[in-house]
Image (tube, rainbow, N blue to C red; front, side, top):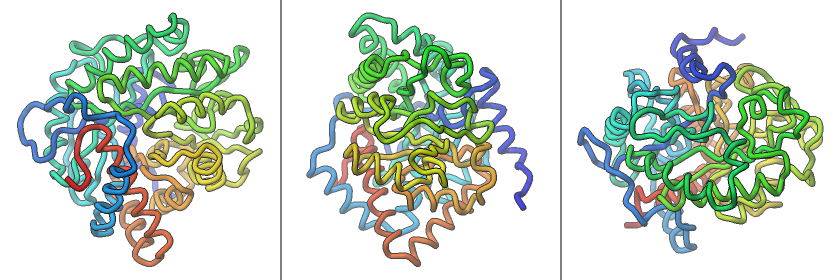
Length: 405
């Protein structure tokens, strides 16, 4: 029997949905890391010119060597991203970060307070990391109803549907400005863009994307092109990116933050996969996997627990070997019937690398179960090391560290 939702977890959900009734819980994470070892009151911007470049084979190898040298607990800590309220770091979340040696956080809840408070929060979070393992801060800054950071210092970003109607190249110009704002506030990882394709006649019934106007358009080629423009703009200002929600949430009705969703149409050769192929070929830094079930691909597992989708489609079919990130494994209703201790383990077993958890009260259970599995299962331990290396490579791409340096 599941325990009732902890009050802090409920607050995480409420904070996330306060400004948008159907806003997804884990789609708005922020990455705003501070240079390792910094204890200043202001976050330093990510070093210009150091982030977002495609990692070289030498860099990837150096990050793998560094990951292999880490104790198991440190490797596992790199594979989890906990939610932090944009209003400030509470003691429960601070303890979860420090005790579990977490490598990443995501800023949850919309704020209109502006850049300065976020700059200070990023600096505080950055002080919890080390020179060897800096903390990565992420956020959902898509636009429209999914723009976590607002107020002075942050441009009000139009929704993706409006962005999709802009002339060629204009989105890259605007996204560059948005990325510069994130970077100046200490944020180097944007969990965007959304590359889901929502058919024109389903925009009013597709709760996670269409209703919130998060889709660039209804034609796969256009969606892929606009998603790539968005990514190029982010990369211009050294902000790394995550496309979502593979293999697509454009055909479901239920928002997975508030219930279970099932897709009976998407198959391995569906046109809705085209935008993901476009941005993977174009150099997107990470791919967020959806928490819906895709009955034509793997009817038994949610996508983020499906080796057929992560290892099979993403890794093998599309050749993607960078970070695969989950949707929320903490407060989302789609995972409420799965024991917290099993969620991270199942995601990593399926081929995932970085697990988002919006509920800090279950963080220790998730991490301890993953460490125990790695200590008792050699094949799983190898996966953990490989995933830790991918996360370190992502941090290097963001300009936060240099593997082997």
